[in-house]
Amino acid sequence: MNAAVPDEAPKEAPPPTSSSASKLIRRIHMFTGLFLGPWMLMYALSTLVMTHQDYVASFYSSKNAPMVKERELDYTRSFPSETAREEVGRQVLQDIGLEGRHYVSGGRNGQPLVINRQHGFNFRRITFDPAAHKLVIERQEFRTSAFLERLHRRRGYDQPYVLEDTWGLSVDVAVVTMVFWSLSGIWLWWELKSTRLWGALTLAAGPALFLIFQFLL
Image (cartoon, rainbow, N blue to C red):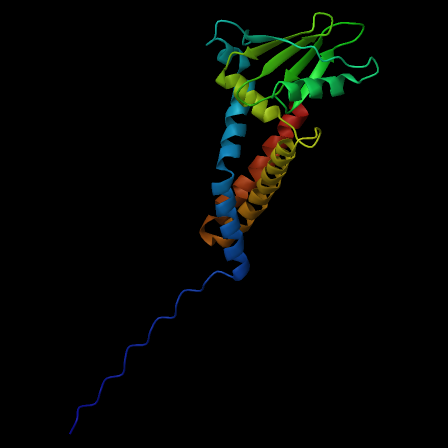
């Protein structure tokens, strides 16, 4: 007679899985953090540079990076007197192959027009003297601190260049993502029951300290 086969030990129920919403939030939290790492690093370092300006400046021989003359060109193009300074600046940059974000100063009453060409790595100053038909192109000596500050302060959408709009869009994405990280952090904290007490204390301490700073500073 065959021996009775003992009943199999009951299997443990699998641990409950996270909900679809939780998984989605965790994935977005992680992948946006990986993707936007360079932006977050740039804003962190540039904020430190601006907060400790005097200390950072002590590493250099002068407070402001000097301008170095790159080249001087003959420039015979003339512009009607009613041409706006901004249009003259755009045309000059186009003629010398330096199109991009810039702002202008001077250029009134026969004075030279100064075009400040904004660029992450190489800030340039182009001086157009219509009376002498000359262009003087100067480049600012590269400094990491100035580079970080330029990136931090860089805006988008206010000039007719696709790259500027793209940069502006990337900054918008970074800002929206930081808001999402704050909200999703609350979600992730609430899901971990073992950390709810310390999480609640942290959640209360952060806004409280922020409000104290606003009233005292």
